[in-house]
Structures are given as C-alpha cells and as structure tokens.
Image (cartoon, rainbow, N blue to C red; front, side):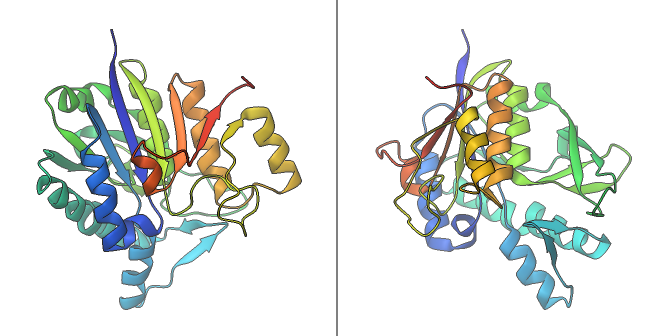
Length: 262
C-alpha cells in the first residue's frame, strides 16, 4: 500500500516576504506524513542582481539566464533562500535538508536549445533520481528543493520551480500517493484577474484549453497549469493551486485540477 506524499511548491510574494513565509512554514510543518517543499525566489534574485549591477531580463515571465545571472540564481536559490527555509523548518522540529538538482544527482537536465529565444543556462528536466530522494523521505527527512538542475557534465542550470515540483511529483508517483500543491499569493486560478474572489474551484483539461483560447487564462498562469496537468497524466492523485490559507486544509479556496470533466 502506497503512503501519502505531499509536495508543496511555494513561490511569488509568499516566499519573499518574512510574514507570509513564516505562516506558510507553520502550516507546512503541520502537514502529516511525508512531505517535500520546492521553492522559488525570483524576486530576491532580481534584487540581488540589481545590487551587483546585473540586469535581469525576462521574456513572458521567464528569466534569461546568462553566465552572470546563473551565478546569482545559484547563490540565491541554492544558498540564501534555501538555507533560510531549512533553518526555519528546523526551528519547527522538521528535520529538513536543502537540495539542488546537483545534490545526490537529484535532477538532471539539458540546456534548453535555442529556437526563437536564447534562454541561456536554462535546463529542461530529463531525469529525476527517485531512489536517492525516496531514501531521504523514508528516513523521515524533509527535502527542501531549490529550482536548480545540472547536466551531469559539471554545468548548473536554472530550472522553473513549478517544473521542478511537477517532475518530482510525477517521478515519485510510482512509489507514493502524491498530492501536489502550488502555493502562491492568489487564492487560485482566477476567472477575472481583477477580482481576487473569482476563483475557478474546479478546472479540467478541456475547460483549461477553452479558457486559454479565450484569454481568460494567460501569461504566467499557463506554465503553472501546464505543469499541474502534466503531473496528473503521470499518476499524481491530486493537484491544487491555492494561497497560504488554502494550505491549512480548512479553507474552500483554491483550484483543483482534473484531466476530464467529473
């Protein structure tokens, strides 16, 4: 019988602001059973890059990662943000370990090929080392994973945090009953971006495609949803997009994804 595994991906303002991060970690620490936390940290990377005189370039919400930017995101994601979260979880009696994709050969990727846009040192995931991370989970350790991968040839790569969470969830679904939660500053997927309460409570694949065509769902929400639906196709049992309140499991907020209309 498979045991439960909850994977929470936290990003946006939630991970950047001390108060919201503390609230999230309080709720995360109360999740019963096996768990993994995947984090972003883009705003911190942008701020520190600016202090170093390095311009941050974005295309459709995705970071162009040249060599200088790669150095910054490796330091910020793999160091500053990751270790701060680990330390805070330890203070909440969660035996956490901070990992990047290079640690334990956890996540291998290939440098994204140049098509219309050269994204630089951005990695597309090819492999997740399930055995290593399963050993940690089964030993009662909580992995905290930074959005960094590597190519197996000594090169670190910047990889979207939603993708990291989805790939981990899909790979681990073979051994665990996986719930994937994307937690950010919105209550869920909004039917009207101007109305914070216009949450779409249930979203299936056909309806998602319809909303994309109409423009109701656009921009940065599309990669998050693509990753969520991909996870479901790989055997993940539940995908929820919500805010910190939704993580408490006491709130009706959030958007649950399904492949087909129930």
